[in-house]
Image (cartoon, rainbow over all chains, first blue to last red; front, side, top):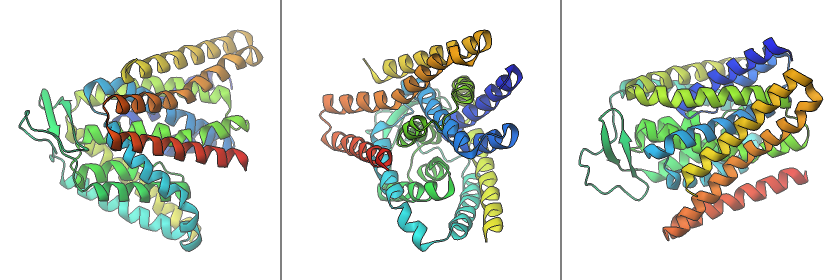
Length: 276
Length: 88
């Protein structure tokens, strides 16, 4: 890797970090293919770099947003238990469902969720009464859209946990982070505001990546130069993404989320078509 | 230390180590940079661990038994998963 490659990798990391911070996603779905296609990095090495960038996104977003009250750690930990159980059961799913079937179901699901997200652009999920007590897994945060502290209630908790189990289950099979499923489900059906859903998802993905990143590192599957350049880019991008996202109306975030969901749906349709 | 302070310290430490590693790599070559880069990546991997510990500590201080149990479950799941994966 020379100095020009270094700048390009930092730029890719910046883009991944920005998207990750805005939407609570790892950014690996875009970064890993870019590293393999542009730099001929072996898939395993690229995946190792991708895991490091997920941890970096998570750290940067958590450090930038926790003061706003966006991260709901209580809810996040519960969802993490769900996604971990789903991940452990991934082997069972792989025995009964082919990769093509899972990719097709995921493609249709993400396309449908994208459509629902667009239909609910102005859904705020907050309680106007500032004195109201949040539910057990709800919370308070400073809402930039309203310019004051607001309360939200997390509802349909079993659905949120079920979505986490499914997200954890299919993420291993499809190489996706669970955030792409969790964020819209939390926002559309579980009463969680989009800013809280994305920041909580960002908090979660770092812990999820932690279960495999040290293994990649210990086995020499993390190219330190690409990882360092990507992580530096991600840290800058995530920091900028949080500030940019906080300054934008929530409906802009939802439009971006819908666009990413459509892109993921397209990639999954492509994968289904290639493997079936 | 608070969740916020721990997070910020970990992110700043990681950034400084990795930036120093990349600067060393450009100035003196890859061999001289590797210790900095490895230290930076290890610091990076420690950031979620620190967040988990501070979250658990905050849950204990609040005497939120459900949250403590959930956080402990996360610790156990991550620990067992990691141990199984490293043992393969």
